[in-house]
Length: 398
Ligand SMILES: Cc1cc2nc3c(=O)[nH]c(=O)nc-3n(C[C@H](O)[C@H](O)[C@H](O)COP(=O)(O)OP(=O)(O)OC[C@H]3O[C@@H](n4cnc5c(N)ncnc54)[C@H](O)[C@@H]3O)c2cc1C
Image (tube, rainbow, N blue to C red):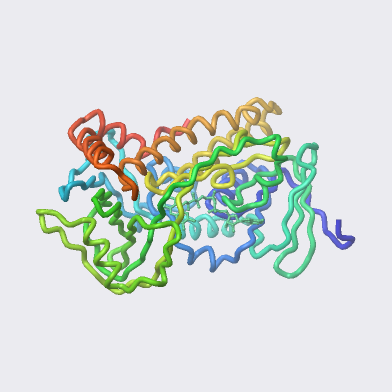
């Protein structure tokens, strides 16, 4: 340890100030459980990073019912369904009719803004722009986090519990010895080419389009900014595409006899998002607990990543709260198994949606027609639609 390190004693040390870390900090503070969050990026960078956009009903309730903010209800958009589009024809799935739930279009960066503001409002200890973070002594009763803060001061956090909420590229998962964890991983032979465009919405709800040219997702952000994706090669160079080429590619994938036409506008962000499915088992090592992308990642087709992170946090918060209020470690001991139950359901759903909607380069005519048969089967069956609607809007939180 650096000789000049200052010691911070608290109950829970949280690595990562994304949705998982900040939400956990918020819930713990409400119950009087001391905690600190360290985050390597600065507030502005996170605020301007565009990621997920669809919140399950349970995620919305976590924001509103725990006093984070109600902005999601006033500035977000409730979506009562999606369109599945194949063979150029749209089939609407009415979530309210099918399962009595909705989802909300509310970008992840707004979720971050709300959570960071709530932490500030409530006097939370969140350190942005930290460097050199490391976790240690995880198998002892005093697990630790070391970091250098934005002013160059060295700190060592002494906690009862360390939570790795540091995303898929974080340090916490890697601190678990390889022989103590199982890495369940697959990569996909495609990625998403994502754009943000200044244009009016092309449709009131999300359109998930399967076409012989590949998948496209027509999504929204606001009245003036839209989010769209099309399936591409994982090695695609986003900078090599002109706006016109991108619009033509998207349009080709949604063309149909109904003449549906995308509303075009200037494109101001282009990125390629690789697809991976990963689960670390267990989500615990000693007194380190993993939550959110730190423990698992899903391809974005089912819009599950952010929602799973918040669902983990709900389970972990209840376990930590129970530990401090009753002294019993029972729920903490069950955390990994309980969280993984939902994680694997979401992994299956994300994998299923991805396989059903995307086109593989080497796809045989049999496989192409089988997928169209699968889509037709889902679209024509109330039971098929209900499975999709239940998973998409989110299984009830435990
Ligand atoms: C480009 C992109 C697009 C996405 N689109 C979608 C989508 O459309 N739908 C969907 O559901 N999901 C999507 N996801 C996934 C979704 O964004 C994640 O599931 C969600 O962010 C998980 O939240 P989290 O808090 O677990 O992790 P994160 O949001 O990744 O937060 C982890 C935080 O930890 C910080 N950190 C990392 N290492 C350290 C360290 N050593 N010390 C301190 N801090 C550290 C990071 O800076 C980060 O802020 C997307 C992800 C990406 C990358």
